[in-house]
Length: 512
Image 1 (cartoon, rainbow, N blue to C red):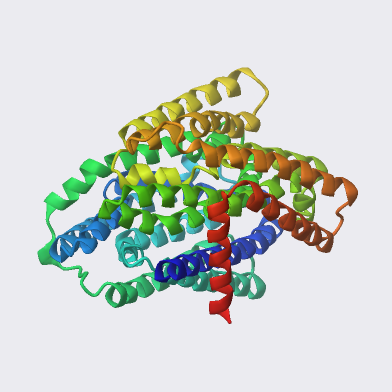
Image 2 (image 1 turned 180 degrees about the horizontal axis):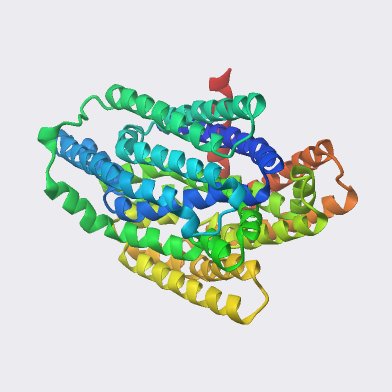
């Protein structure tokens, strides 16, 4: 009973947090593009990509921290948990201090490295400095968030994130409304929010996990080395992700131009949020899966993993397919400063970006299986190989064809599609010493359900021409009902349908 209550609470909080963030980004992104211009807007995404380059090195010992601390707490090995937490925290702080100087130098000389509109050089430099500073604050203190995972209280983390999103929106609305518009306001909001979330996380670290303490005496390089030894593959995986889609804005800026970079940045805005939704829903299951794996109950672990796949796919596939089908009227209404040809281009780029996600939505929880079992080497090496192939193919296509920005967006998606459909389900089953087809039933059910949704949504779109937000919202509501009904009937087994209904009834009862 308690587990079901915690699961539903975590899920509801995470989804609500995502919806608020999506709504805020929806309104602010459109407004910023209208006021500042699509060309400058692209530098926000490019700056975020640069911070992800730094994470290649830090993710080696940060990615596995929550897993190790949680396992140690479950086994009541409190001193060991504190040693892991303190050692990684101190490392993060030292790295943040070291990275401050090169961050400043990059901001000062950025116009010599990439294409920057001359009339916006100062604004973009200040934007990047503030974004980098906020990132370094978060890097130095992100270990505080371990308490939410270890206590399975992701709902509290989601609530803090929700407050953070609202604060960020408030700062930007006030700044753009009462002062002359500047893109660096985005960086200002980022750094203020980073400071606030740090204090929140520190408070909950003491409240939720009082046995966890960060002290200098607990530091030991041995624990960092242990996490690096296991987590180094997370760094390689991060590198592979960058090779696949982390350099797309930079490549576009250098080889095509800042204007097309802005178009690609707009096209990736909503897909990035949708991918965040999938990660949010999937991560709700990760603490429970980790606890079950640590307890040695393999049968329960497999059952939870299969259910996670179906819930993640059933919840997230509907907005995903809805966005693909209704993309053109959406962009026409959202970015009214774009021309008709711009809208078509952005929609095509969005679809290319979302292509692998359309299928990975059902296998996303399987990525956690590799992390939980600490078997990351083979999938990471494969991803790295795909990433290298992506850069080579994109470069060749840019030099020999007129595909331009479509090559940048399309090649990585095509390569990722093969990894999602063929490798991920088989390798997760292999890790758990199960039949290689163990995780294909949820995926196949999801594909069938997705095809039916596309046909149904297209039929609805052909009946009614969307010319206003009211019309789009009404059509989205109708298609949402249709989509979730299809998913409920096809994706879940008879036993899982009963479980879903119980969870819904209990959540409604608790709300009352």
